[in-house]
Length: 116
Image 1 (cartoon, rainbow, N blue to C red):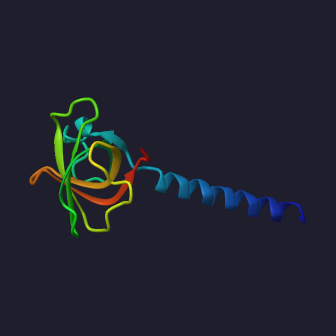
Image 2 (image 1 turned 180 degrees about the horizontal axis):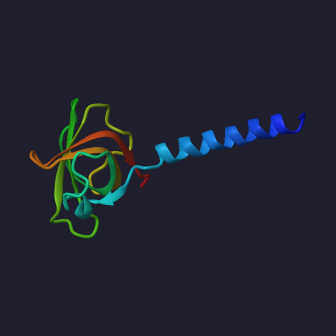
């Protein structure tokens, strides 16, 4: 009996960790070309792209991203937070949030920049 209780506690802890990992790891990672397919409209996604231009550095930050392999594919993004430190035109970044196909606008909850 002394061995069974600790074993059950460890098993329950592992089950909890697995459940948390599954629920938090479900954000699809896409390219701009995949986002415009319509399959992920309204869902939280992470999009990897290039920063093409910055229209406004005031909050909300407004900028445009392009597909890494097809720069013709562009999406405007709004981000209601401070500009990241390495936020530079021409650099790679990732935005996490939702895409609204009716407005063509991506509403970012997080912006991740890569170091140059």
